[in-house]
Length: 150
View 1 (cartoon, rainbow, N blue to C red):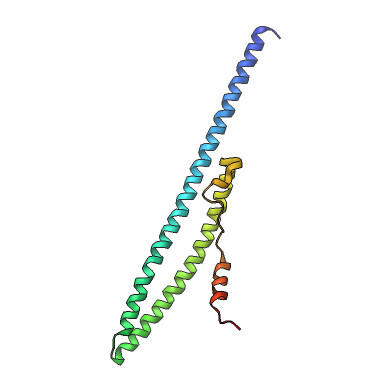
View 2 (view 1 turned 135 degrees about the horizontal axis):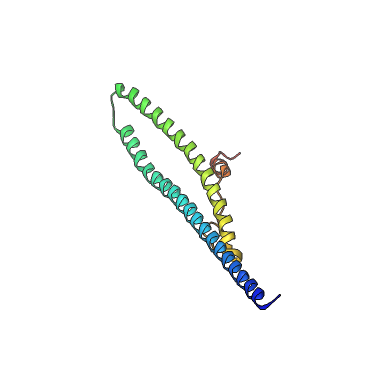
């Protein structure tokens, strides 16, 4: 191998290193973009849930206000209809919450994987590590807590 061949081989090695570094940088940028999207989606769901939860006391207060007022018997039929509608909405919100729990669980697990890839050994510093993931057992725990004791 003469001097020109060695120089050419060295230039190829340098070019391959640059290509490798560029691919690694692009991969990290893609991971960062995906992580930002997961974080944004998770935060949007949490924000909507908190707004919905903030409206609940107002709706309850309005319902109590209408029930406390002395109303003629003809209005009782309307209250039953309103109560049934409220029950249907509440059941719908409950199932919507269960679906959001599933979505958030998937987002948290995805966020954890992305944090491990992006942060390496320091993955525990990420936003998705350290917390308990909600699931159906939370509702079972609440039911057990408020059930009559034997």
